[in-house]
Image (tube, rainbow, N blue to C red):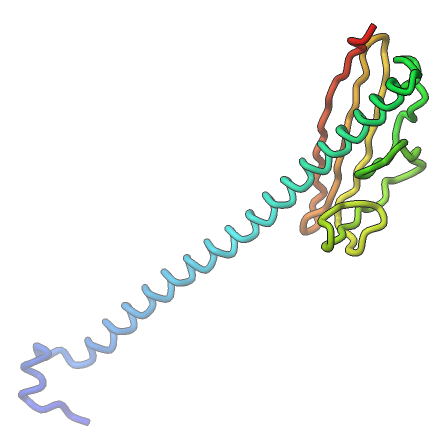
Length: 170
């Protein structure tokens, strides 16, 4: 279809330039949208990683707190500071544990119960988190380590939390 003289004057006599300008503008818009999509995808991936790290931190802190409760209970029952030496060097604990379960081999995966929001070894949904707690006693000081391991997209992650307790009740 030939353009009339009037149409050529409107476009300044440049046949086909409108098509080229449209293609360039459209490609710039597509590149901009793709950049936003990549940014959002990366952001969602990092958010998931942060959430898993926060859960691992709370699980490690829970392991130390449960161990602290076990130590306090043993001392309160009259066992004295020496009674905590009977705690195994590597063990598993879960919320409400009265005593540590000695660990033989690798730690079992923690499971999540959505009904009560508690992680345990008997929950409903298996999680990628595995928690190992270790304790050592040297004189008047007990050192408790909680190590939580999990895997994210084929990458192994580890979080190690440590606390120290002293025999201040002498």
